[in-house]
Every structure is written in structure tokens, then in C-alpha cells.
Amino acid sequence: MNRTSCEYQKCVRILKEELLPAMGCTEPIAVAYCAAVARETLGEMPDRVIVEASGNIIKNVKSVVVPNTGHLRGIPAAAAAGIVAGNASKQLEVISEVSEEKQKDIAEFLEKIPVKVTLADTPLVFDIIVKTFKGENSATVRIANYHTNIVLIEKNGKVLKSENVHAGSEEGLTDRGFLSVELILDFANSVDLKDVKELLDQQISYNMAIAEEGLRGDYGANIGSVLLASNEETLKLRAAAMAAAGSDARMSGCELPVVINSGSGNQGMTASVPVIVYARGINASEEKLYRALVLSNLIAIHQKTGIGRLSAYCGAINAGAAAGCGVAYLEDGSLDAISHTLVNALAIVSGVICDGAKASCAGKIAVAVLNGFLGYEMYQKRQQFLGGDGIVKKGVESTIKSVGRLGHDGMQQTDVEILHIMID
Image (tube, rainbow, N blue to C red; front, side):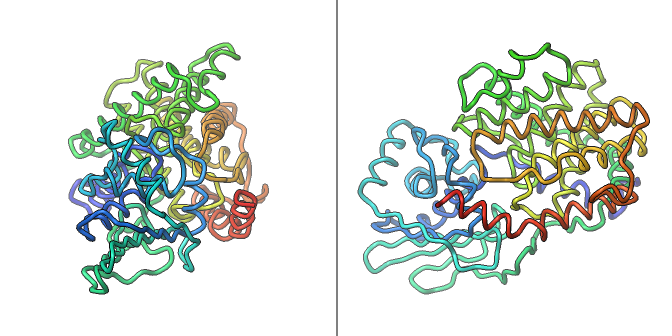
């Protein structure tokens, strides 16, 4: 692919838009960011706060620990953290620098100031509205469709910023509709690494650091440690365990950042950590590792384009399949190997549900990564699932579309029932 081509430039932009640093689970952090902007707009500490959120936001914030809050959970904690200690200029690292004194202030704020949470009346899957009040003054901020997309800022009834909002629209981001597995492989093989090295170095540094911390510490259900303690260690098992350990730590409030993918830290770790571990295990060159990460990240993004940012379909499954493709790239590198790996992996575990961010995400990541490896091992043994086998269609792009339809359309009612179960 020519560096000056439109597709090349779009691929670079997509990676820059998606491989963002974030500290904490991205949905509560988006709430904290929205609240921090609202507090900044109000110009003073509020005496009353209302948070309106779509069902998927409520689902993904309910059970996860908000970092730098003293292990608090939930939307009120995320909003309070953003209001009391947030630095809005840092976006998804909005509460990455919070002193112990500020943590006490967050707890005190929650004791004294009412933070009301309601289900937003919205057609959007991703919608957060934070309203702050101080006496007769008020400020409202809305984030919609993706984690940093502020579409409304209002103070005392005066609109300071307003953008049209359409369900599923990601205006402001590069269109992903041109992506295909074949094009992604072409880009991975031809990309000038100077264009992506800084992004990938940060991904490697951040995501491996939290994976290693997850193995050292006592976080959540310690899925990563359990895997290594309960089984004879192999390279693929360690790759899965380290990805899971990163989630163990992150879901339990570890105060280390990650580089995300498709708006998710868990997906960012799943698409990268197994590829890094495997590449180092086989002594692949640094260049080969970078190109494998480019491929894995973009294939994860490509799959999520049809599903959407939030869904009842577990995004770790997509990312684990993408990691399997990264391993196929390291070992084989052909379009045939990568395509069959992806189809095989998606055929096996598509349909694993997302029931919010919490400790069990680490277990799903482990399953997803091992499944990605299985997809490639099937290809090595000349085994495959064929078009017509369930949701599998002839050709990798047709199968990706099937999974997109399943996750976006088919699981909408599942999403509603999951939320009802969680808040019953």
C-alpha cells in the first residue's frame, strides 16, 4: 500500500483515534470526564448532581471499581471523582492523578451532595448527560456515541456547544467502512513504522505493565494467576493468562493506565498482550511484532465497526479472535491463514454475553484468547468451518458481517434482559 494513498492515511488516523490511553474502565471514566467538564463549566462546586445514562452505560459502570476513589463503585462515585478531582483536559485519564486527600474529598462529597442517577430517555446505546447545580446556576454536559464525544455544553440555559446526534453515528471519527482483512494485511505489511511506532510503544509499555501487575497482585478472581497455577505453562497459556491478569487488575481499580481499542481497555489488552507475549516467546523481531500489532488492532476495530461500541455481544471475543490473527501473522503471514483463523474463532464462541464490566471479564478474555489460538491451530491442521455452518458465511468479510448483525441487531433484546437481571 502506498504511503500517500487515501486508505493508508485513513488506517493511520484510525489507529490514532482508537489506541488511546485510559486509566480505569472506560465507561465510568467517560462519566467522570463528562462530570469534570460540567463542573468546569459551572465554575464552582455543585450542591446537586443528576446523571442520566443509557442502559449500557449503567450496565458497564454498576460493578466495576472506579480507580483513585478508595475502591468505590458505580455512577455516583465516577461522577463525584470527576467533579472533585478530575482534570478534564486529560479526557480518559481524567482521574489519573488524585491525591489521598482528594480521595477523602470524593467520599465526603458523596456523603453530603445528592447524586441522582436515572435511566436516560434516549435511542442511543451510548449516552451520558451530567447536570450540575449550585443555587440558581446550572451546567449540563452530554457525551454521546463514543467516550470522548461531547455533543452538548450548556450553562444557565445558554448553549455553549451543540452538535446533532444520531444513533450509532461516530461523526468526527474516520469512517471505518472501507476496512477489510485483505486491506488490513496489506497495510500491516507496508506501513512505515515511524507512523505508528509511538502508538504501539505506548500500547506495549502500558498494557504489559498492568498485565504483570495483575499477576503480582491480588485482584478480582485472579484469573491470570489461576490459569498459570492450575495448568502446565505453555506459551499460548501464558499469553492468555497475562491478558486476563491485566483485566483482573483493571476491573478491580488498579491505578495503572492501559491503551484501549474500540473504546475498551479490556479489548485493548486482549488484542495486544497475547501478541506481544507470543512474539517475545518465539523471538520475533521488533519489526514483526509491530506489524502483527497493527494487524491485530485493526482487525479488532474492523469487527467492532458492525457491532457498535456497546452491545450484549462480548467485545473480548472479537479482540481474542484478532489476537489469534496476530499470532497467525507472526507464524505464517498469509491472508489465507489470517482469514481462516478469524472465521474459525468467530464460529466457536460468538454469542458470549457482555453483562457489564467486572471481575468475570478476565475469564472471558482468557476464553477468547485461547479460542483465537484454536482458530489458528485448526488452520495449521487444515481444518475449517464452512459457509452455511451456523452463522458462518462463505468468505471472511461475509462472516464478519454476520457477527456484526448478531451483535448489533440480534442481541438488542438480550441487552435489555441483561440490564433487567442486573438491576432486579
